[in-house]
Length: 150
Image 1 (cartoon, rainbow, N blue to C red):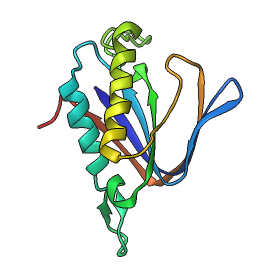
Image 2: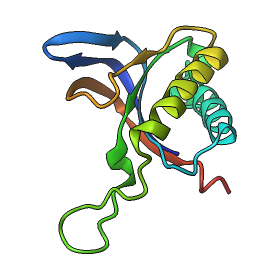
Image 3: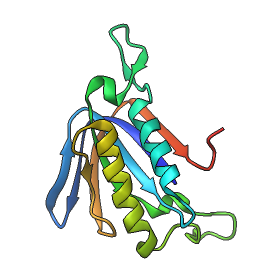
């Protein structure tokens, strides 16, 4: 499971001209799911995201977490995070889980993140053509892969 998280001062997801999620200060999470991902990956990643100290304290040092700031989050499915560009010029997405596997894991990830944060999390629409607007705060952009925990 991979995520690219961006600290945002605001973000929104639009599908078919309708805003389906929007937040102010918090994290926009692009989430890529592999067939081999497990509940253990979900639990580890949601705890990591909620506790990652990427928000500034009073001195301007990144020393506060999403939990500390009571910030918001939006989770958007992003199979292209598993693109392989080793051969040729057309990316391969062989490692990305098919929808039958990815959708339940995506839903469990959202449920677990809401549980860890003790608040509702915004989402995109799985498989939809989404338009994402954001103001990256910092900018702060971090990628995390549950297969590279050490």
